[in-house]
Length: 178
Image (spheres, rainbow, N blue to C red):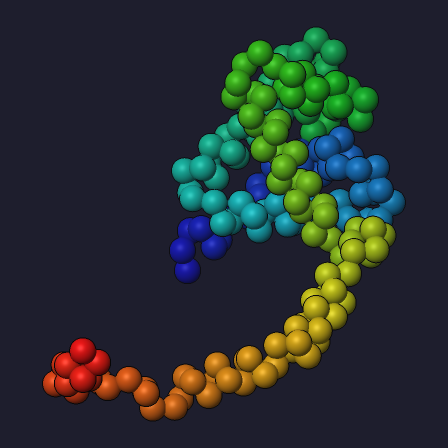
């Protein structure tokens, strides 16, 4: 198995991401009980990243977490251990930072978590999002409208080629045509 497929959050990264879910996801995340599922989905997404990008993201998350301890309002606590209102303030500092790497990390984390949040079945049910029902409806309608064309195309794939296939036969057909 490749390294890419073996990625798992460290305890530090997992704790940090759990603390970020209520900050970057809609408030329903906790009520719906999807916090851990969101963190797990972020891990799955990170498995798909190239190893250097994944390492950079983990390094950025670790920097985000540890550097909070130097922030006077944090009183020596890492970002994952801050009370929610302080954690939200710390995230906002990174989101609005004049330093591009900080802003981009905040955006990347929010994007990963938003995707993970909206992929959760409980969230989709809450929103009334049922893509399979729509897919089934459209599939049956398209089969009804296009079934004759589909069958004709399927037949054309297995029938002999109506055009001459040999070079000599093509030349003869070309001469006959003028």
